Image (tube, rainbow, N blue to C red; front, top):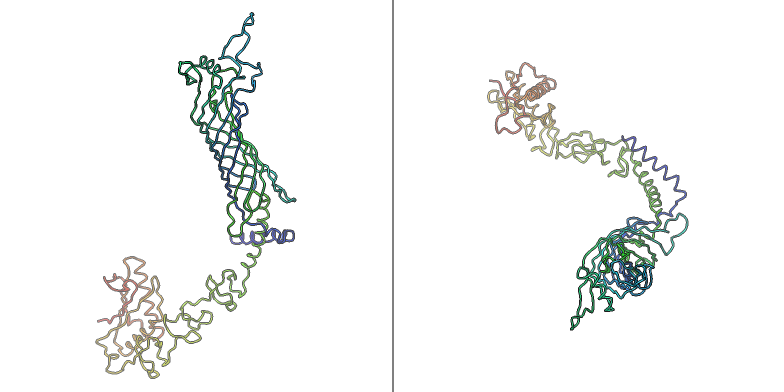
Length: 513
């Protein structure tokens, strides 16, 4: 797996070198860009409905846009304003200038049939105080080019979905029209108004509600610098409703669905600009991402070179080497620092005694300093001036009197214990002195026999480990001080006493009574 990673890394470097001659430093100028913009719009409005005489309304709104890429964005847009319209000017059905007069029968008599009349001229007017909110997906055209610079003006298309809240009031300005339509459709569609003489003078239609919309359209915008864009946008809304003009009477050719449109003048502020980022995604070439990738390969090449460099040849690359100037072939940790197992300040590859006792004072070669050469390092030697050849206590370094003293008292014998590391049967160097004193005592007391008692956890493997430890001590005394093996016995089956420190990894040396 490791060789595969190295191969892929080298391949990436090779590919980056192939293109480096062409891209040079050109692509270094491309940086992360702004994505958000917010703005306001002012919009004349018009309707396409059963009352679609051109009557201008006005709306004011705001928008927020997030540019997912250079060509695609999402835009949240909201408006509040008015929609106006009437039926007083144009014959939209094409059946004559007066839809209330139609020919009927052989006698060619003018009759009125409002339920089947063409939606042509009458005096109906309406006003819709509306609010809308919609989300559109926007596709920007014209900013895709490999060769030429981007233009200052862009065309974009969009579509989406939204909701329209309507509050509409419609009425007839000519009293005769109000009377005729109220008589035809009655209270189901109209609220009548009467004068003091109880004469019908107006018929009012109302609608208040909300409807799903599908906005779609196109727009143009111009880049005015680092912070500002301005543009103009036409947005048509398909409403799936026949109510935005409050004219939903069952007349002939009544439109099933109404539309309304906004022609918006917009200004947008491009948000961001921190950390020296001035460009916006809308005004960056989409192939820029390719340029950025190629630029990153150059950076990768430099990093790979650094990752593979090993100045001190210690097997740890300089990129991770905390000690990049160690001697050649020095033993080092994974961080590149020279290994020093006994933490005596002398690297192991220079340490003549790499397992010196913790806390010991050592010389330049890593050997524990022992001025009086009594085998007890000075850092724990209570008497650093004992005479050469003097028998000393292996723990304290103080002289032990021979003859009549404790050394040659063969009745009251107190022998040391030896403690091992967990799971190990190797005698630690700090107990060599203790075993030396045991050997001297056994030489001074030829009848002294010793029991090596080992404690173990209650398991087969625990007993085996205790046996190995006791055997290691006996072998050491026999090999180094020629103490006969028949002067030793072993007991390695006992469990460690409660409350005994190091109970499961200790061998006690006891006098056999």
